[in-house]
Amino acid sequence: MQQEKWVRKIRAGDQTAFRQFYEAYAGPAIRTASAITRNREMAKDAVQETFIRVYRQIGSYNPTLPFDPWFYRILTNECLRLMKRESPLSTIETLENAPSLVEESFDQLTELYDIIQALDDSHRIPLILKYIKGFSEKEIADILGLNQNTVKSRLFKGRKRLKEQLEPTREEDMF
Image 1 (tube, rainbow, N blue to C red):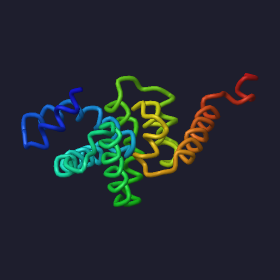
Image 2 (tube, helix red, strand yellow):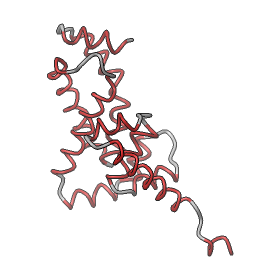
Image 3 (tube, rainbow, N blue to C red):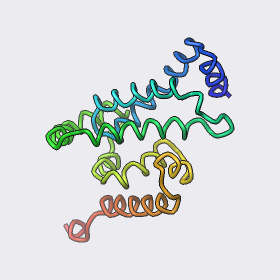
């Protein structure tokens, strides 16, 4: 697998392998970070810091485990760290800029994506990791440092909230 080759070469100090790895992962990482942070500039910062950390910490990666959960755990932690530093004022600015963020982050602007973005972080991030990135519940638990049952519960509640938002109310159906 290509990831295994990159990891081996990066550990050996191969700059070309790191550049190839970066080119393959940067786009998906930006989209994921944008979905998590709801802020394109913050997402870029998180991705940049993630690649620096990956480069510095590649020696701590266990090659017997899947690479993507390890990488996305670093990315998610960076996103959360930057979001914690964020002031309330920048949160308001982020929400005002959300439509342009969505257009930049994904090819298709959908009602579902807007609803996902409106969810609180504890439900939104697991949904993104599960349904946009395709991670298993166990991998999400590892990435977020949570119990797998907690992830299952958050996914269930997140899907329930999505369903509630997507289903028209009875009053709307009457007109």
